Image 1 (cartoon, rainbow, N blue to C red):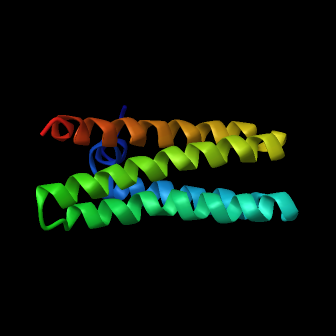
Image 2: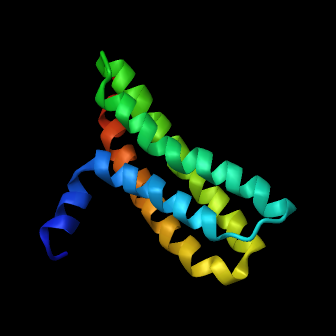
Length: 123
């Protein structure tokens, strides 16, 4: 990684989850509107933007238990987004590369959130 912008993105989860949601929105805007995509777009926009919204709630949590719960929701929404990306790639083979790019970021976020909550699972 080079440059301050990329380094900041890696460690600033508020910014990273916000950018992820924005990228999902931008991607949804380029998908053709048809009966299948209409439903897939609704789903991916919901789950993809919820990652950041839940992270914001986790950041403002009033207890460790609440924090872990909100981070678990972040993980759940990131995983759900991966599912919708798979479905969108099937419905739109020409968008597969962009789906893979977003899927990779969703996977990284899933792993980050998993590592945050892992120590707390046994308590």
